[in-house]
Amino acid sequence: MPKDTGRTLVASNRKARHDYLVEDTYEAGVVLMGTEVKALRAGRASLVDGFAEVNGGELWLLNVHIPEYAQGTWTNHAPRRKRKLLLHKTEILKIEAAVREKGKTLVPLALYFKDGRAKVEIAVARGKREYDKRHTLRERQDRREAERAMSVRANR
Image 1 (spheres, helix red, strand yellow):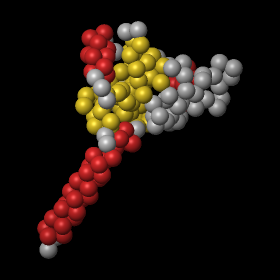
Image 2 (cartoon, helix red, strand yellow; image 1 turned 90 degrees about the horizontal axis):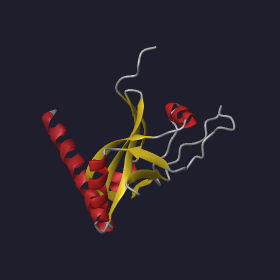
Image 3 (spheres, one colour; image 1 turned 90 degrees about the vertical axis):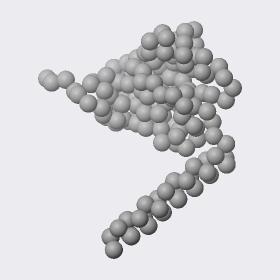
């Protein structure tokens, strides 16, 4: 059987980019059980409440919901269990130093398969204030209106 190639997106956290200012992103492997992999291949996961933390020199993914596999038996996994992330030690130390700063956190942005292996894209992010969120929405809306006006002008 040929090996999977490319990137297959399972879940993305679109709300994270709205609620946080992303400063740095990392790609990490995820330690999963067999039924979790099968549930992910079925395209079922939610990153909405998820976050990551450094604990004892290791990186852990918490509150990510991967529902139980329907055909699983008594060996099924807990949907919101703590999952270990795989990164190089230097990257973990860099992340730990960044998260120690006030107002920064680790947020999962996407969960996907890359060449057959489960990966998660995590970001060191700073929380946005309400006025920052409104400002970002306003900029996006203005950009859209400008593009619309330019396309109408170009079609004449």
